[in-house]
Image 1 (cartoon, rainbow, N blue to C red):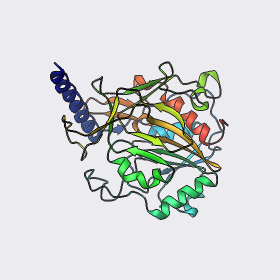
Image 2: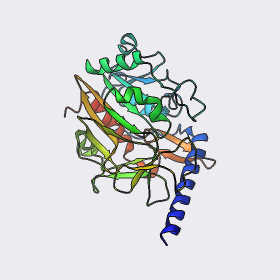
Image 3: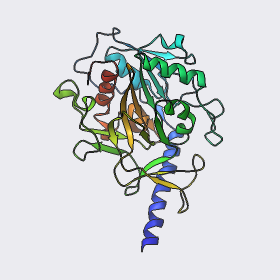
Image 4: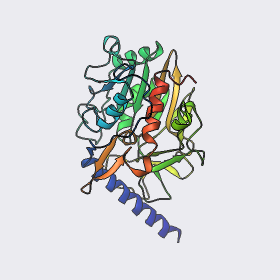
Length: 313
């Protein structure tokens, strides 16, 4: 009986992974997504400058899969600019908030199989670390394998350690993970409380992704429950078998923030949660436009409010 259950479970997870792989090959931005903002944080075009990294072969860009991300922030008053230069003291002066979504290396931009090259140079890592220390704000999304391996130089500079795998719930067939305040997996924080009752967030959905831990100073937002494991595949798209290495990640994070010197860092183990995409041949909504993710847009705005200092705590 146990063997049959395990075989069925593995089959379901394999099917979920195959579906994820197919979706990734067919994801396009949803240009119609335009959620309301009752009270923008800043006058139009007068808010802090947000640099959206496009210098590292990023899977999500301001005119591509992060179109909805960029437009939502602009309607909240932020100035969103593509950042096409490698990170340096000079390039980072242009913005208050740096957003890095699924950076890739040159060799791995179209080939997600190992070896996985570092996406950032030592000089870039040092520049970003010092910029945050001096008061900059970093938001970083690092999805499932191979993104953690490619980004680990930068994440580890902040004491953030990712599992380079797929974070999946063993009890369901795949699909979004929903973190709820009611079940304790969405934590109470200035970000989830917002500035007003209308900005309070009680539920956040993510779409596959990875798990991480932080050495010290973590302020958790999204915490994995007891049925989540990280499958440590040898290569992207590999099928899960009974022999596949896996790591229980109960209590690990898929979203957290931290303070570093005078600056702030927000890190998430999933990127589609802040996109609005149409996936697959049937153009199914995935991301902030999915019904299950109705509060994700407000959650994103709250994260930016915290990074820009509007949420003080």
